[in-house]
Image (cartoon, rainbow, N blue to C red):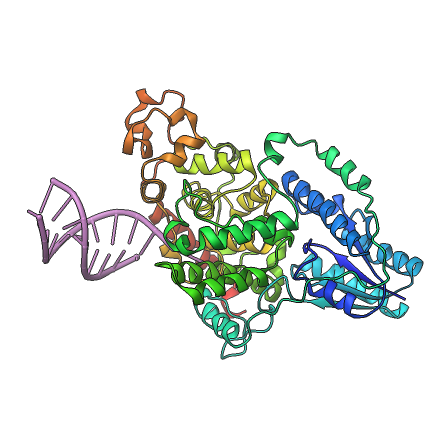
Length: 485
DNA sequence: AATAGGTTTCG
DNA sequence: GAAACCTAT
């Protein structure tokens, strides 16, 4: 009789409820990871993200090995094969219980349901734990018993829950007495990593694995969290935690993040320390918010807008403008700097995700799904719920009312959040010689940046056009009888 | 989690 | 004349 931990996007040994439960069952413990390149293709997982996952798995295999837990990497091209692959494995290894961390997007839910249905007749229960989030997706309901669809009231409830019941961290896993360490065979992983064939200049920017993630969290909490509120919106500063990658692959747990943030919040020693921690906790709450949106509105997984009437918006399908956006040559410095950061590092500062998404969906008026998909293909932290939520927020098709708020001026954003142009100059060499504030509007000094493109669209009248297009969409929706449904 | 355009206030 | 303030969308 053996207990099995099925690893997915929870690639850690510390702070891991499923692993803790498996060890607590007093049976021998094994672990598996289903390697699914076909599923990665379907979900458009970025090569750099695949690399991060594989490299983190390599470390996890060694960590688990020291605890006497063998980690097996099982080939399983797509989710469709998961039930058969796991059933065969469980049969061969006398598995009696299966433990995992729950995932909430539709394909993952269906996979897990199919696995549970296949294993139950074999006498194996699949037991899920909700520690990929702080508050489980169906736990919080409004007064009307419906899921929260506006962030602010959600955040208030989330805070109350946190105060009443702070997340608990399971004890560090220990090697059971009498169990010998095992050696992890990383050959399959290393072969996959070689297939990706990514340049060292790219992978060298990132440190995979649980140890690096823990260290990064600790350093952020010690050095930057107190100033997070002040610094987080300036892409030229190291103001953010950079933990999105670790959180999305589970090399760090949100519970650990919240525990550290609450400690800083309570200490509140440094001036502003409290505000910094509170603001960062909000970002963790956003993460939970979009996960509970995804879990409660599963049609989002099929490309549907959250607000049905916005499904009738007539987006542009201009491939050339889209390509200019992807490659960072729109002629708007901060947008281009943002896209070049994404393309060259696999990551983009959160402020810039809003700026570039807003530019694609509102200024170019191109379908937000094109942008959502491009981000997934590039991002090392590509997380379906957060990415979809962010894109729909920018495109005004998503949660939170007041869409007329939602047109950024790429010039204003640039002036506010990269005032002296440091970040732009780092990312866009063609603009390096533009002095001072001129950098925000290079078309006014074309001779100083001869290699930089002219703006691909004018900013004039954007708001009126967007408002008109959304009004037209609502009319179509209402006259199609959508209002009554 | 915003902008534009106006008015008032300040040095 | 710049900065702060107000307001409609």
